[in-house]
Length: 289
Ligand SMILES: NC(=O)c1ccc[n+]([C@@H]2O[C@H](COP(=O)([O-])OP(=O)(O)OC[C@H]3O[C@@H](n4cnc5c(N)ncnc54)[C@H](O)[C@@H]3O)[C@@H](O)[C@H]2O)c1
Ligand SMILES: O=C(O)C(=O)C[C@]1(C(=O)O)C=C[C@@H](O)C=C1
Image (cartoon, rainbow, N blue to C red):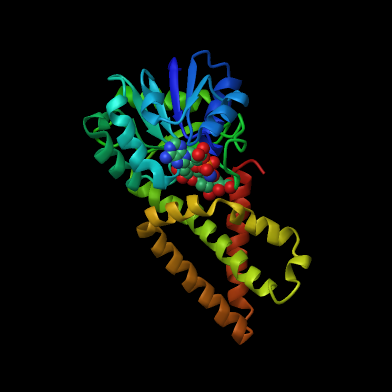
């Protein structure tokens, strides 16, 4: 594990990297960068890092590894800010939920340091945000996708792979475009649907008492609608090209179901629900129940 690790952004994802490194006995120095002096004090009080400040360029000076864990909308500025302050041998990675957009921003912001950048995405999270949201075991047994480019240095890739293995994660490599298509379907679309459903019902609930009777079904389907609206607007905006086709396909499938319900046809419902149950049961079994 690198000796000096800088983490820019100590919310759910960056904070969990810090807590995980601590819990697994990392003996080097952890440096954190947050947005306000009050957050820096809080990060130190929580024991997340050894040094904390609000200047990303100061935070990365002398670091062997830099983990950029800010919202997608703050990636471009952050990468451009740290570029001149990076040590020559430093490896840089990110945790952003979209990869083509971050790679383009890293190429522009890091310039000649781009080869030291390893695009990454831990497929693990919760609906919570902020300094208190992280936990040490967030990445244990979870997947991390790395999307190196043709220019990515092999030793930077090895350093970042080692970070995630050290946190107990399983590392997979794939192309950035494929990553964005897969995550559009399995993460970004579900978030859009959950936000839309809760908003739609909330506007109905202004006139009725429906939420008084919502229970497990509603809670299971909508947990992720408690996620941060700014974070998710950034993600959806950055991955719109991959989200639009799966969103359109889903709307078409819903229209088919609506027509079947309207016509009183049972067979299309049984076909859809049956296929869905099988697929969901296989997914649950593959995750270990
Ligand atoms: N939430 C998830 O489930 C999840 C999962 C995987 C990856 N991600 C990705 O991880 C990244 C961080 O998400 P999060 O859930 O940890 O969000 P978060 O809001 O919990 O944390 C973001 C942190 O970045 C800080 N920050 C924001 N702008 C900054 C700036 N300009 N400079 C320095 N710090 C800044 C915030 O103060 C906060 O500490 C995002 O890019 C997101 O796409 C999120
Ligand atoms: O479990 C959650 O709450 C999450 O939102 C985690 C989740 C997901 O959709 O699975 C969200 C965003 C990511 O980039 C990766 C993982």
